[in-house]
Amino acid sequence: MTTEQRKYKFHYLIDSDSCMACGACELECKYDAVYVDDNADYAINISNCLRCGKCFRACPSDAIKKIMTPS
Image 1 (spheres, helix red, strand yellow):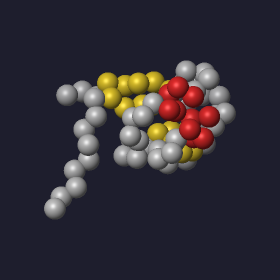
Image 2 (cartoon, one colour):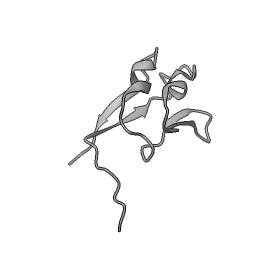
Image 3 (tube, rainbow, N blue to C red):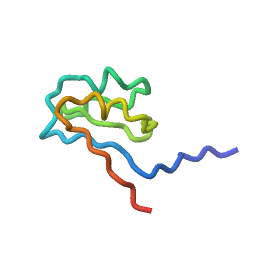
Image 4 (cartoon, rainbow, N blue to C red):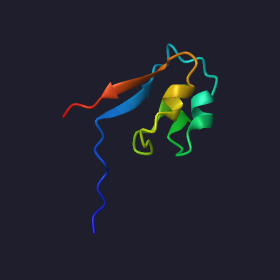
């Protein structure tokens, strides 16, 4: 049996220039998709992300963008 990754119509991306590094997105994410990368910026691991939108709604600076995935 093979495991295929789900194909989503969109994904979320954190704009490091707009991010206040408050951690609200990381606190809201129950799937360990939000993390601090090597540059000390918040980022989203799209492999773990279920596209629930909790991080998107929690961001007070609108730094999380919804990006449409090309088909």
